[in-house]
Image 1 (cartoon, one colour):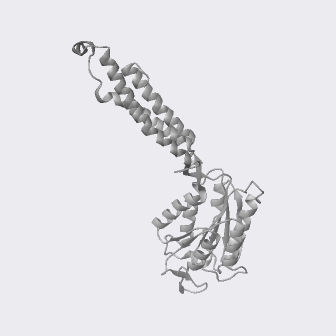
Image 2: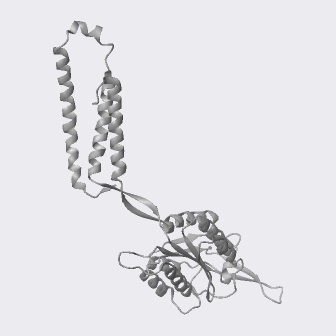
Image 3: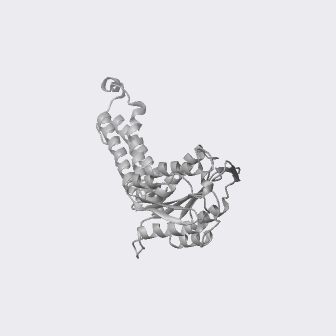
Length: 324
């Protein structure tokens, strides 16, 4: 917690004075009672001593006073706030290596599961788009509120072509940026982000990943990347027209994806198992869906202070026929 006017915390120096005043008042009451009563008759006039109960209202009042003085300093708390009107574009690699089965059932279908879980938990006010890429990019779904439409458009089979990673980043960033529009003075555009899922580095394409990532940073569209697969991945596929099964080594290559995430101010993830996919989904939800912002909580603190003071007054009135 922080404070907008921390110098007003000096008012807490009044608390020791309040304690000292309470002690003096209690002693004064004791002396006044002794002056107007006969000690021998007190046991017949008083049913019993209040004991420690007499300090309960004072303690509650003191807590209320401390909170009230803290409220003067305008306390601020950092909390998670759901972004409004945001757009997330999901870019998925559908090149041939995504049919590898080192992540069950295949890298591509594991990516679909991750996307499904992520999309289903996005706030209703979010738009989401889908871009797929191999040796070229395709905008399969422009940003929409229709989650079912996006999931139906998700491919289930990879293509035996290369990976245009830089082009995919460029296209996805353009789609996201156009969806939220341009910022104007005093009115920034709603948040936009890209989630890119792939298993390797660029093999074809016109735009280099670093160049596309730099443009994403300029447009304030962070690109979070997920590398999906293992270093020992092997792709098995039948050669058309023969009985021969081809085995290709297709290890993941995370370096380009790390560069994209770092340059664009996104987050890089590695996912080779179901547990890691779940952790990626959970973390992505908090990073892409929520912002951490400072909010003034003076009203809450002041309300709590008044609550303590009122409870203290109620106890004191019920037990001792006085407010303090």
